Structures are given as C-alpha cells and as structure tokens.
Image (cartoon, rainbow, N blue to C red; front, side):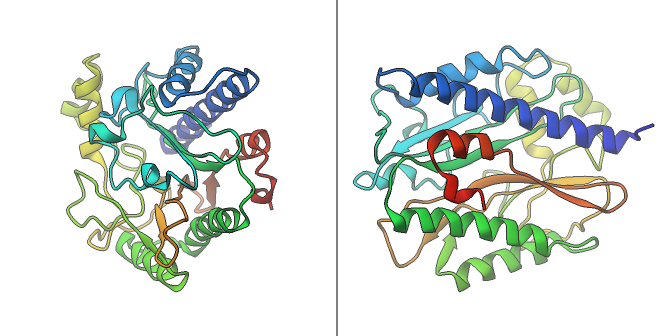
Length: 294
C-alpha cells in the first residue's frame, strides 16, 4: 500500500503528464492547420485541452499571467521576446498580435496545473525551436544537458543552497548565466523551488484556502508555500520530496541565442531513489527536435 508521500508524488507526476499531453495535442492540432498561430491562440487551445481533465483546476497557480500560462514566440531576429526575468509584467503576457514563425520560430511555453483534491502542482514548461540554425540547436541541447547534470549531482542531505551554487558554477563554466526574478525569493538566485505539501503537509489555514474555490487565493497559498533552490535556502534534500529544476540560461557571449529553459521536476522517493520528470519527448518529436532525444 502506498504511503501518503508516495501518493502525492504520483499525483505530481500525473498532473504534469496531463499538462504535457494537452500541449502536445494542442500543438499537433494547430500545426496541422494552415492558419496563423498566435500566442493567445496556443493558450486558448491548450486551455481547452486541459479543461477535459476534471482532476485539475481550470487555471494554473502561477497568476498573473492570465490562467497561469507563459507562451512567448520569437525568432532569430526577434529574440528579445524570450528574455524574461519574470512573466508577471503585462508585456510578457501572451498576445494575439504575435505569431509563430513555423520555419525559424522559437517558443517558450509553460503552465502551472493544480490537482483539485490535493493542491499538488505539476508545473511543466520548455523552450522549443522550429528552425535549423546549428548554434541555436547546440545551445538548447547544452541547457538541457546542464539541467540533467544538476539533477545527477543531487544527493540526500544536500542543502538547496549547495545545489544552487553547483548549478550557477556549472552555468558559469559554460559561459551561461541564470537570469530570474521571483516575487517570493529575495535572493533572486534560484534555479527551482519545492513542490509544496508533498514533504510537508498543508496547514489547517492553507487547507481552508485551498477549499475556497477562489483561484487567486489558491494561487497565493501555493506560491507562498514554496521554498527555493537558492543560495540562501538551507533546506536539505529528503526522501518523499519533490522540487523543480528550471534554470533559465542565457549565453553571455552570444546575444543572438535565446534564453532557454527546460522546466523539470526532481522526485525523491521514500526509498531515496531519484527520478527526473521531463515529459518532453512527444513535443520534441512533433516539432522535429530529434537532436534533443539522445
């Protein structure tokens, strides 16, 4: 019989998988059409696909932006659209006037799903590229490899601050920088955050908030519950814990390369075994990014 922490880990995995599947199905439908694809258009299609899953709330917890979505389109000549420190400002909300370049487009996509019954989140996001520029391909692969290397470095008992230092040092060695701002992280150095209430349960007050049916109250409760993988955080990796690994990396030497990230979740099972949730393969194959599948 599964204990409570392992059950929550399974909910996290399932919630993330639903979000990934919904994005893959949405992209497939839109790409099979000849109609232009706007940022808002992808959001609307993704939201429609997600609403089929009754076990998650209709909106994500990361609001603003609207509904908990990040969808940003750019290309080699419009790379600044992807240089976001935070998606909270309105300028980085999805627009109906910005369209995907199907031949050379770059897109950053994210959603923040919440399981209705438990309040467990299963965040999912990634950067994708529709073009053929080898430098951009190598950059994306490097960022993904670094994300996986951070995960491989993690051991039980390791402080979040030490994980962050390793990640930032690794980025520096690869001439990359992590550029992020979070309203709940005073250090502004984080490369991820804990999945709330898997290792430590909700308080009675938080449970009341989660039952409120007010999506903003639910979002605020989840957001404030997070601990960050930052240079300041002394929390240690423990069995029955889950946290995101999501460095957003810029090349310090080449301004033509996009900010890239691959939002993953590290799961530490009760027996101490690790698992990295990616759920990217179907989307990589759909877009033709087979170089990311090694």
